[in-house]
Length: 308
Image (tube, rainbow, N blue to C red):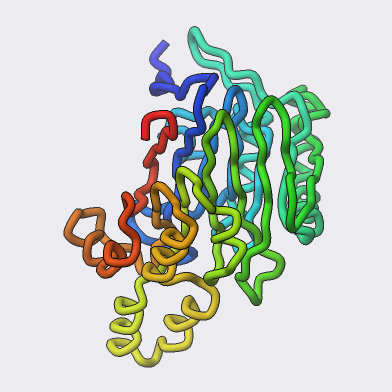
């Protein structure tokens, strides 16, 4: 049968924390930059943090079958962080069969974690799926249990603590989007934080103290200022990121204060070309503030904390 085979898949078990960045972009569309999403692996668990548009395609490219996802964590509810939820929900629930391989669909409710606004927003999304879901259950005979969502809503505190895996949510500041969260993952003596979208906040330093990996959003102020000068009629839209995001230099200061072992910058505004020259220009001045390793995130980058 001339059916396209699956590519190389990530292992079913991870002894150490590992994260794959599925999307490093923003609401604006850039070539090679998908919307915000990352998968964190710990033991036999896979956690999807945010799910912007195109997230399932990115998972497939990364070797992650969507059927592995039963836990989705939202940092906040901007469209570039939640617009891919429909595809994740349905694709993870449906069994996928090709010659010699069967990927069993999700037979448990999807567990959705997020700020206290999450059930209201994602619940409305789920209601909009009813027509499709009813067909899947009654015609395709998908398990009806997988059509459900269980919610874990908390703006601050431990949201998951099982099998040696601990996930802590904490508030950040992305107003007018409120509430907005970051997440800290701890497993097997290693730790990482995913910032979500935020201005600099004390909580980020507090929860990132001594961690192995900080994945923090950032924008380049000089580049944005140059665009505003070039296109003054777009000044309002171009200047808004400064109101609720973090500059590259501010992210470096957070990493320095917290004693982070490795800083990864993501959610690039504006997105640089994927060249060493462009990325070095984007982080100009950062190395003078933070002396540890710095990585400019690209889509599908992997970080295995057991090998760092």
